[in-house]
Amino acid sequence: MIPQDYHMHSNFSCDCQWSMVEMCQSAIERGIRENGFTEHYDLHPGERCRDWFRPAPWWEELAHCRERFAGQLTIRAGIEIGEPHLFAAEAAEMLATLPFDYVIGSLHWVGNESVFDPGYFQRHDSDEAFGAFFEELEAMTRTADFDILGHFDVPIRTAHAIYGGYDPQRHEAAIRAVLRNCIDRGIALDLNTAALRRPANALTPNLTILRWYAEMGGERITLGSDAHHPPHVGANLTEALQAAHEVGLRTLTFFEQRQARSVPYVLPLPAEVA
Ligand SMILES: [Zn+2]
Ligand SMILES: [Zn+2]
Image: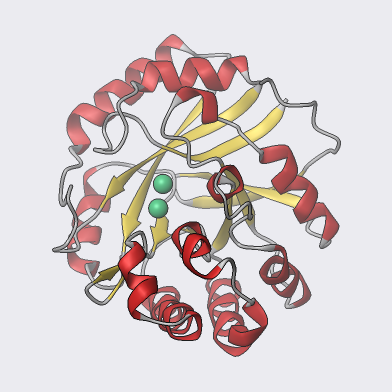
């Protein structure tokens, strides 16, 4: 069994066309015990799907899935809020509408530039592009209200095609400041496997960052496939957990009603269902 997959989308996110039922069925087929839907809630003015998320019908569908898959799958109510530090009032308003189990905070924009736009990396060199990103991430983790930091160094997904890679050591001070904020405020890290399925072939956060986190006393991690279609549910999570084990992190964190609970995990997990 795979203990959790805490980062996935359904057709309540505008970049995903699969239903919650289909995502849940895939989770059960892949031996996942507990999953969480984390639809995009993006408010940046440049977002194509700005303010797209509708909580009421989503909650209805979630309740339907909980009933339908009771005894097979524990389904958590998450949300992935983009730049929660810049839209604190709107985020708080959204969080007041439903009893969310956890909130992923994600940085997708640096100022007016999207880190999924190759142009961002063409206009700036690697030091500039990643430096500005981590600086903004420090501000986000210092003030915003969320439980899990989404895909720590996500720019690598797009940057890989332009620079080939990046060296976290060149940003060590800024990255450690982010980690310090997370540890001090009890924010867990999303071990996000989406970039392992892209040319970047990297866990986000990458292993160096994960090692710094463990060294600094960080303990809270969650597993996230960031699946946007059923075959990706649970993908590469065994690999992510092995990375965590390698740096000495021994528990997974679970959330219910925004309360964290850390549970030791057992390796090896079974080989993934293809
Ligand atoms: Zn994201
Ligand atoms: Zn996501």
